[in-house]
Image 1 (cartoon, one colour):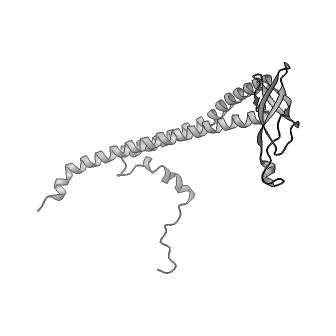
Image 2 (tube, helix red, strand yellow):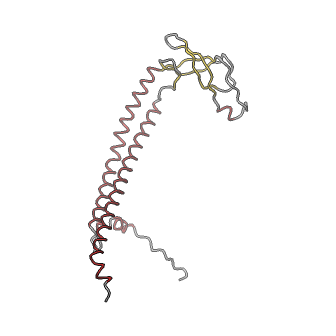
Image 3 (spheres, rainbow, N blue to C red):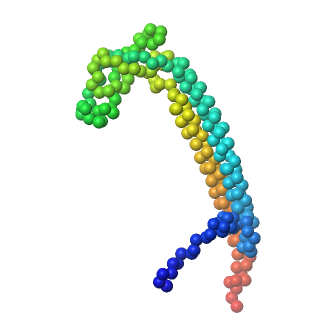
Length: 208
């Protein structure tokens, strides 16, 4: 009919809980598997709600302490020093371009550790830096160039990342558990249906 929509009217808010937990409502078609699946879903929801803040706190706290110790160890075993280029850095094909400003080339440099020993290594430098130029580098006790120690912001960021991964793991585990339970219950329902049909099929298909 013109002006008539074939879509069913939307359910009012008070009906949503009834739809979500229809398996718990008494009705002639409800099976034990439906009730079990509903309670499993409800139980897993409560577990996720309780485990999410717990995982966020415990994993985040453990990760923060781990990365804080790592930062302290790095600060104690790395030093900031000046290195001198022992060769000219490579030139970029397009000097002055935006790409040239972002490009770094590995160039041999020489630096001295706190014990006065001289080391050579390759450091990333800007294009076309001439031999004898200096730059600041971080080096470890083994005489090799390394990254700077983790900053407090990096420690917090990595700890938060670990906590979020733990939370996602909780949600993924709950989803897998519910999916597995759903498949098992569905398989049980199909087997029960086939058994019941085998017992009644002969009466439905018997010729008069």
